[in-house]
Amino acid sequence: MHSLLSLDIGKKNIHIVEGSFIKGSIMVNKAVTIDVPEGSFRGETISDPEILMDSIKRAIQTHGFNTKEAVVTFDGYGSVIRDVDLPAAKPKEIAEMINNEMVQTYHVTSEKVIQYKNVEKVTGEDGILLDRYRVAAIDREIVEAYHNLLIGLKLKPEAMDININAMDKLLEGEITINDTIINEEGAVLMDFGDELSTIYILSKGKPIFYRQVDSGAGEIEKIVSDQVFESVENIRKMKEEGFNFFGNGEEEQKYFNILRPFFYNLTDEIRKIIGFYTSRPNVGKAERMFLFGGGSNLKGFAEYCESSLGMHTEQITHISKIKFKDPKTPLAPYMNAIGALVRY
Image (tube, rainbow, N blue to C red; front, side, top):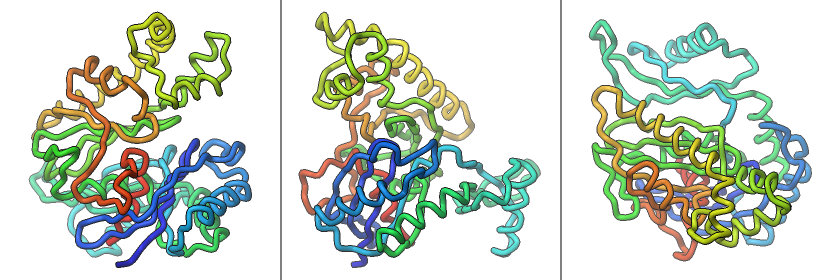
């Protein structure tokens, strides 16, 4: 069984898992989360690779990760991701057509690295059967920075993913989430990150649908801190220790009134995304929502979403194809890193 080390590098946390993918199942042998050192990033670019490298190296040594073959995944914010429909052709011709489409239609420059995968067959306007490709154009500088990071850690780079692709691989096929079988009616999944959230809609037999929302759980402490005489660090500590900003007590209501516009705008964006998806032809109604990512631990958030969106909402705790060597390991923070373990 071939093991890989997978690094999901966000702006606040790095999730590291060691595991393997075989015959449609994933075994996670070890998992740990560390903080991203301050000053590591400027926007989407790694600005100080040395401190980032030192932090990851310490985690690898401290927690006894032994696998040298490594993959890295990140949120892909700023990447150009589009679906392109093309007639059947030879692989080289497909590559040329995709490159031309991205350059001419979406103005992608040579500074981008283009990756693509065939996601489904569709019928064109003239009735001709076409192949739909999901294409990602990523800044070459970012690709090279992550490659160099793995080399600096004395790891063997196997692949680089963006989270959308990692989730696509993780969730394809027959899937049961929290004992719920995902069928034609579909389900919404929300990766509630620190600066960015991604909404996925999963329906049996269809490629995963997604949209990114420029809003994350890390905004909570900043919004509250601006309104009360408390530091960002203290508010973050309250949040991480399980304070319920949605509670009915006087103190909870004080904070919720400050955060009300943030949560309203977030759920309104989710509602619009779901509405856009369900308005398309030949798709079913999304019946429930599952939360993952660091923000999914926010106490009371699932209940708030359920009330606001009118659909059953819960945090992801287990998926049928994933097994942990340590059953106490939470799944929600490690979804992207686990998805990146899936290699074909």
